Image 1: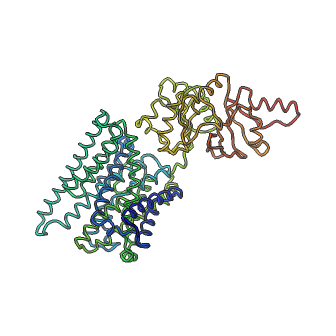
Image 2: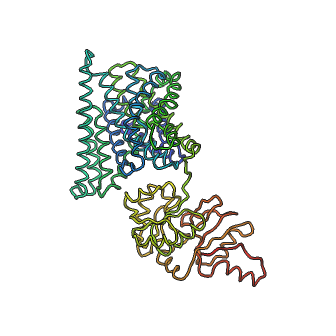
Image 3: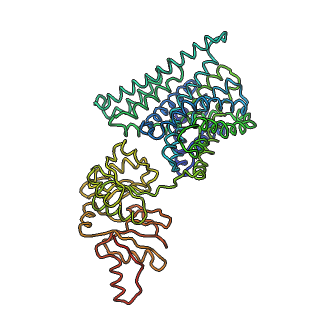
Length: 617
């Protein structure tokens, strides 16, 4: 017998949540599927978890506070610069799409699941919420136009509090008043809207206050993240006391304000919130799924399929297509958005909050809301998550895996490398903090930009989905390390490389590794350019294999990249040696005497046939 079974169960929830998300990462599948399986296994199947008994009255506050932090973290991802291309589409999906979606989803719930109109209207309001925690990973796995990705991301996060507000309005009409006239109902609606506006202004004021205090050193660095967390929770609680669920508006607005104002600690704060959100999502989802009742789920089995078909094939497409009438967005992109609308943790959590209250009020049909929300989340996530890439490809808007190369830092060596890769057919872009440095790149007809890659606004100009690899190759080892540290979490550490730092600099090598299979820093690379080293491209064939090619290389020379017949490429690095086969082209950094010249000398001496032609820079 455990001395403290509740402590054991709390630890178990944490373990199950992390393991489930690790499995999702390893398999590339939506995490919500494994979190659901973990909760059901620990709850209804094994009976280890029974949240209603284990947590009692704490269950609802735990879920509400977790959802508040999740929505705040979502708000931190909403930077207004994303609206440069997607602003019109986002406004349409908010001001037109929300009411249209609410009506369509309400009808789908009523006619499909068979719930009465009041419950259907409440759940329909929640269903205008798409899943921001699902949309993000889904969009990272496919390469659609930035306008589409930004529109879906903003829609998902902005509609979270709006969906909750709709549910609050319907819930208030269901539970408040004595039903003796419409005046009290309209008065209650006015109070709800006033409280919602006040909650938004409260969040705006807090966001402005924090972004004023943090840069001025009024809060020490080690206290910024804890202070922010406590302010978020306190703000949510205060707003929620005034009006139930209005705290969701407060924390979302607060997050958006902080995302668009300088705090000089935005990266550290965002990482802290992301880590915390991962744990909260896992905990909330396992707790909610552990409360599922098989008997209730069985009551949905005859109706849920029809309801889901109405939701996915009629409600969402009608909402998007009507909202986008007359917009400049191409119809192919509209069709893609008309299909993609997964519901995630926020929809399930908000449904759980209202379901608990409605069940306590003995409202008929309220007990079906939580299992219906889970069914909706699982089916939409699996259906959209596994078909989004296919659908984008069929519509012709899927750009495939990025094939571009970005070099951060313009100098003699990087310009030569960029020119060689561009001659080999690779799309190359260069960037440097100096406006004068980019002139040398443009003289070689290479696309070049001036700006600081560590600046969020400048970095956001680039469509990173189109780049296969990024090389930090400026003259500063420290700057190269910072660029890799900044881009690594966003693009994946496997996509970023830096030139090996000087041994004396003490710079940390990124997880992506360093360029070239051996250690060579920028000073020696530039010295070699001064000594007339060049980049050469050599075709690999059955008669002249890669192993033979390596034998002919100078001892100090090194392969730089391999370009495939399909136009893709890989870089040789300290952590990766790509395979090279027949038909590939190898670009190498070689000394003045080229491979062709050495081979010609040897052939002349030995009387052998010449090797395949080698083009030198």
